[in-house]
Length: 503
Image (cartoon, rainbow, N blue to C red; front, side, top):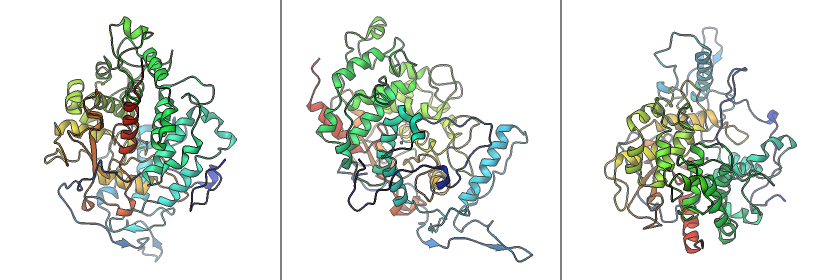
C-alpha cells in the first residue's frame, strides 16, 4: 500500500527512459562504469559554530537565466558562461595529452558535455542560478522522486530484486539528507532476514543496507527486528583466516566485507569474542571479530597508493572509502590510518581522482567522472583530514587544521550543475561532504567501549562565504563513517548497549 505523507501528493513510481532528460553518457561500446551499492536537525550533538577557513566574498544574489552573445550575422548564441563562474570551470585544461586513445577520446567527449552544464547553458537548466552561476538544488523534485522510488516498481526491475535493501537505504538516506522524516516508514518495516530479497542468502552488503535503513526509521520496533545473536554467529562464520570477511558464506572476500561487518558490529554492539563455530578464524589464532582486519586492509593498498578490493588488484575509490572508514571505526583515525596506510601515496592517488574543469571524481585511474564517487571518494577526505589533524580536543572544531584537501567548489558545481535532472533525481548519487566540516572530539556517546572513537564524531556547517550554493540548498549532515544521521547512529548504538546480547 502506498504511504501517504501529510501535505504531499504521492504519484505512482515511474522510471521509463522517455520521461528522463538525457544523462551524461559515454560512447557506445565501452562497458558501463561500475556502481557500488549514499535530515533531521542536529539534535544537540553537532551544535557548534560554522567552521571558518580563510574567507572569500559571499555569493548569494540571483542572476538571469542565460547569457547570450551575438555573431557577425546577428544570430544569438549561448556560448558565453553565466557571470560569476571562474574560468577553471568553463574552459578545457590548458595542458592536453597529445596521445590519442579511446580513453582520451571518451574523456574529451565527457568534458565537452560537462562544460555545457558547468557554464549553465544546457536547455534542461531552467534556473534559478545564484551569483556564482550555480543552479539551485531541486529539492522538491528530488523528494518526490525518492518517495516514488519507495513504491511499486515496473516489471522490468525484477533484475534488481537482490538490491532491494540498497534501494530502500539509498532512498531513505536521500530523503533524510533533504530534511524529510523517515520515521513515517515504521508501518512498513520488513519481517525477516537481510538477504537481498525474499528467500535469498544473507549477504553483508544487504545486511549493512538493512541495518542502516532501520537505524534511520528508528524506534524500538525497528531495532528489535534485528536478531543480533544470529548476526553475531553469522559474522563469526564469515571471518576469514587472513583477518578479512567474506560477504556471504562461501562467497568472495573483499574490503566491502570488512567495512560492512565493522559497521554492523559497532552499531549493533555485537560481542567481539568469536562464536564457537567461527572455525576459520579460530584455526588462524584469532580470538575476536576485529583481530587482523586492519592488517588485511593494509595489504589492500596498491602500488598506486589507492586501495583495492583485495590484495594485488586495481585500486578503486569505493574501496578506498570502505578501508578508511573501517580503520576509523576500529580506532582513532590519527592512529589507525598512518599505522596501516601510506598516507602520502594515498593522498596523491585520491587527489588525482578529481578532474578539472568537471570538478567531479572518478573511481579509478584513467576513468571518467561519475556522480556516485562524490560519496565514495568525497567521503575519504574528512577521514584523512582527521588523521592529519591529530588528536581531537574536547569540544568545538579544531583550532588548527590542515584545511580542505580537495576542491569543494568544484564538486558543488559538478553535483548541482551536471547531475540534477528537472524530473527529480540525479544522474548519480551526490555526496554531502562539501557542505559540512566533520571532526572528532573527546566526547563519545559510547565512552569506554571498543568503538568509543567511532561515536565521537561531530559536524559543523562550512562558513557561508566559502560555498557557492545557497543556504536553502544545504543538506543535513550524515555521520562520515556510518552514512546515516549522527543521531540515528547514536540512537541505535545506545539502544543496543541497553539490550546486551547474552552469549
